Length: 210
Image 1: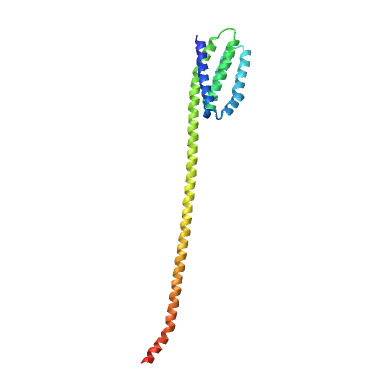
Image 2 (image 1 turned 180 degrees about the horizontal axis):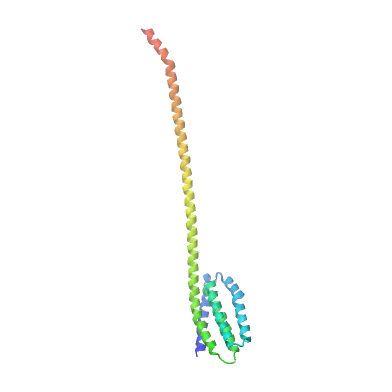
């Protein structure tokens, strides 16, 4: 009935996402980190739940622990996107299946919990996918900003080089003008000196002709 339907739904959801994860090279990047974090956090939480649930005598405590499992799904999806959601939903589903198998009779609370896991798992997948998209967009935005900063630095450096080149060129032109004017003045002074030296001789020659 409902229990089998929920099992098919969860199995199909997890199988499809796992296949996409394995076949898409872009999705496989960073998988080692996700799996390592799952081994450090999700697996111990699942084992602790099983140990406590087997020894607990209060059904209310067990219900509370099941809700904590769902918190694990949400937190891991928030940290690692839809891949974290897949791993955490898979772990919670296995834990609930083991608990159901060990129970003497089918518990309606477990069925409702499986329904809740199916709904929250689908939402966690969508939530994780949205977070992955936002992180990708943020990473691209940061890369674009870094490229813009690099281009700005290059433009500033190019402008500085142009200013220095213009200053050097102005200095060179000013030096050439200074040298040319100096040479012209020197030549003019030399000519004036020669005219001054020749002027008395020409004057005496003119007087002698009279």
